[in-house]
Length: 242
Image (cartoon, rainbow, N blue to C red; front, top):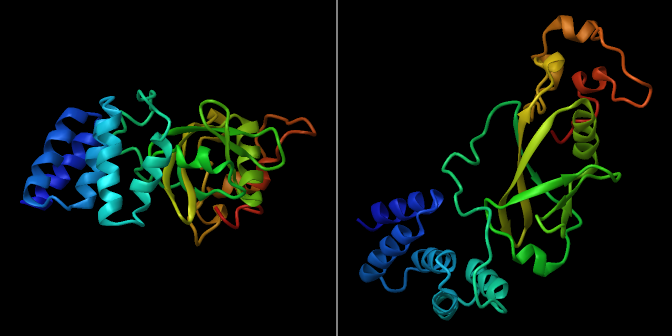
């Protein structure tokens, strides 16, 4: 019964129904008052419902039970100076937000992370943004704060695709002691590159599934000298991590 309620609580939270999430987690806690997973979910529900003091007290209870609970400690750090909740882009996070699509999605570990407070303020499902103007693509929060950078090989590859007209959405997938993971999804592909995916599998390069005519023939459209060469996208020369 507890597991069933927990799954219901997770599902309604993913759909942004925070009142129902609050009520379901309270039900779970009647069965087990020290269930830290339910307490963390309840704290988040209180926060989204703008009940900041209840959110803080609930997270504090988690820390008393488990002093090293990373979710509760991060929440308390994030909420320490808040009196009212701020708008959060992950409120209506859908259940399929992190659905893997071959060739279209990629999970990436960020490097050179930004300020600890900025990172601590992130939640799974938050929208973040790619800034491709530097050597490495930087990832920033909605307010422009630096979150981290994408590793060189992936940055080089993505910069070429962005220059060609590919468009991506980016979400925070997870935040923990190991760092920040983001989930990148291709949402638009230029018509003339319709058969060229953004990402290959981990074990095969693009040639393995790119139609032969695209490997041996250049597109009719000509590029300026400073534009990315399509052959570099197809041959996977820069996708060792992709």
